[in-house]
Image (cartoon, rainbow, N blue to C red):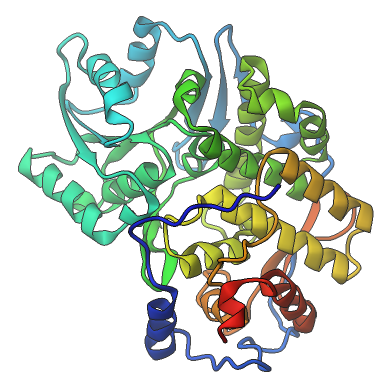
Amino acid sequence: MPLNPRRATVQLLPQLVLLLLTKFGSGFVVSNSVCPFKSSKTDLQDVVIDTSTTSSDELGSTTIAREYYDEVIVDLSDERDYPIYIGSGYSDEEATEILQSHVHGTKVLIVTNDLIAPMYLEKYEKRFSFGGKLSVDTFVVPDGEEHKSMEIMQTILDKCLTIGLDRKATLVALGGGVIGDMVGFAAAIYQRGINFIQIPTTVMAMVDSSVGGKTGVNHPLGKNMIGAFHQPQCVFIDTGTLETLPDRELQSGVSEIVKYGLIRDASLFEWLEQNMEKLLQRDDEAMRYAITRSCQNKAAVVKADEKEAGLRATLNLGHTFGHAIESGSGYGTWLHGEAVSIGMAMAASMSERLGWIQPDLADRIYKLLERANLPVKLPPDSPMNRDTFLKLMSVDKKVSNGQLRLILLRGELGQCVFTGDFDQEAMIEIIDEFVAECAGSSST
């Protein structure tokens, strides 16, 4: 059954968002009958992905398998390659050696949130402090998507200045995607750029946000609209931290693993169909495989298109719809992966409506998401409606020259397209179907 998430105490009122968008936003006019985007015919080139990958070599990423962990290399230009360590059972000595090897100065600031701090902050403070070579400070911020803001970012920068971090200092992001994005952005802009290390503690961060250098914060008018590309020195993943991850957070992260299977890795999707229950039960072997495979996919895409000129945009399957749901419902109402799950369901339905995928593939997608206990539709109390979707989608980062481009599925499993050349009426029909029973739709 789809989830019906509780509303966060602190949330952005959708009406306020829409008012601000109308006044300051994209300049598009939206009514019940007019789509705010330009004609789908454009000189913008489609990005078509057709991959039926079965091995790490075919994925295009280098992977070193060790006894207790895998090491996936993110291969970048200008000697900026960095490793992703994925495993469990690291000894303190081994973890300490790995982490300290990626610190090039003498000062370290570990930033985490008030949920993670009691569980893991002391452990990592000791690991960076061991041997007395490094001066280590810590800083704790509030947990939650609603705190992924310029205001909280400012407090991180204040801390950097207060303790006198220099250009050789290293920031450490200990937590989920919100922490990783904010700390990475702080590292990108503090003294015009300092090093940072990602230590993700959620599935979502492990398989997606910690890899690839996208950093930033939310703005009231849109998600992740303020940020920079800034690559970490390394990503250190200890899957043991997932033992304390709430079920809902784990399921949210699984949505991004499903995404890789849909856009480029049919073998992974088929593996998920056979092993979803093992993942949800946190089976060590299954979790390590799924995270490593996801990181291999992400590393290959980042290598080919670091700054999202085209190919990397395909990693946003379901995200244009999903970001609108997150923003329009109020940050914190949905977990990111939950909103993306609904977005992927919408993208699958739209792809089927366009005749780009067969109905049986759309059915497989819905069934796998539901087996992961992820939502595939909006609940009746949702404030979403057609206008909310269209206004928020009009400021999506994939809009170019007034034209919305979407990542849609086309062809066999593992094939997708990033395009603006689609029937916009089909998109509106899908939106209307998904909001038909929502409270926000009945109020318009």
